[in-house]
Length: 167
Image (cartoon, rainbow, N blue to C red; front, side, top):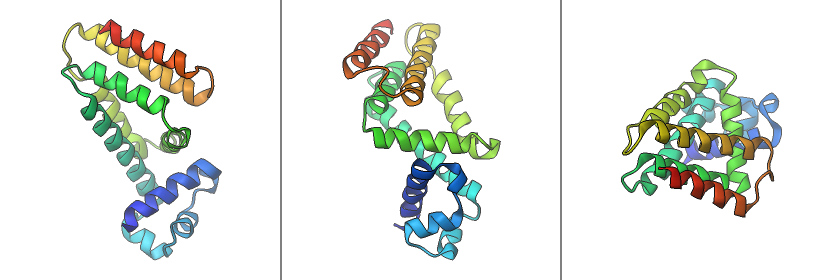
């Protein structure tokens, strides 16, 4: 599918060269499509980045759903740690998308909406504890992206289990 190939190329370009080199022409070339073909799917660079954010949100929502066992916070923590402990190339792409979207309120709107939903979703048990656990999981995610290697696999597993034990 051309749209998916364009999104994959855009993510790869963001990871490899950052936002400074992120142009529609560069994405089209990387995806192997004409600039006109890219513009058919994404009218602007902002629309392309917003689509990347939407895809990221959809992927994370599917992960939460796949881990849901009656506790939203447990599913959220499990999905978050799955990302953190997963393939560094995948997590790097996600971080690059978030960074690119942070430069513009319109591009990051789908992510802001998702964060509100993720962090205020009703849950079983104590709501405050549920929210604290989700916030702690977010903190681990951010540390792991800003300072890779801070936690080894064993420590990540311990942190994950401690958070799950709280809910």
